[in-house]
Image (cartoon, rainbow, N blue to C red):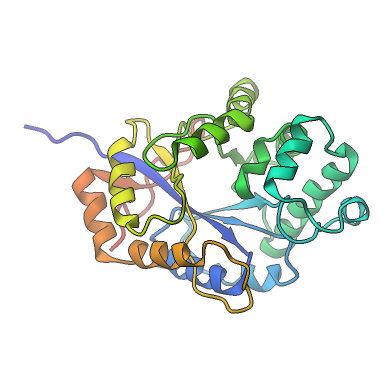
Length: 289
């Protein structure tokens, strides 16, 4: 009797670059082959130093751009002239759906963040997504897609239009309805590589991250999916980090033997899942160990 073919999970750590401790924790996991992707915020002054932490990471690691429109200050002078500080997520969602995002200034900001990625990494991002999923909001979505299509080779795109698994049902609904479904339709229409489904949504206050992961692995569809996570080390300089405790829990679990055991028990391997991508479907190491 033959066993079922393994399902593939892309595991992406978000928020690299947001604080030194967060970046250090993510970098350790990346070098240990516990991740398949890292998504980078480039708006901080220390971004080039953070980027250096990924030097020598496995070739199978996808490093992407995590567009930031809700935390700290803008990178571009044009947007900073209007918004000295970036708006909160609720305010940005409201502005986006009222058609009040300043298009020229937003275009300048997106391109500034992309340029900062290239300057520090010396290469284009393997994929593009958004901090708090801002890349799918009206206004920024169209500008981001136009920018993405001018990057060669074409980066992949995080699809937020099909969110599966356990966790907060309201958050999953909000992600899909505030722009995720429109983003998926645009990616399909423009033939941009993307993940078929998204996992990893939860309220950050659940103390049992392993139990959540086991349920996400059970919900993983045959075509694979991308799971986003937020591991990291404590950082006293990032005193306003609302999810610091969750970052530690995620970091500890992803570095543990329990994670390897859960992947094996579920018949899941780590790898790339971008639909339309010509890259190999499975990374060099199928499970962390």
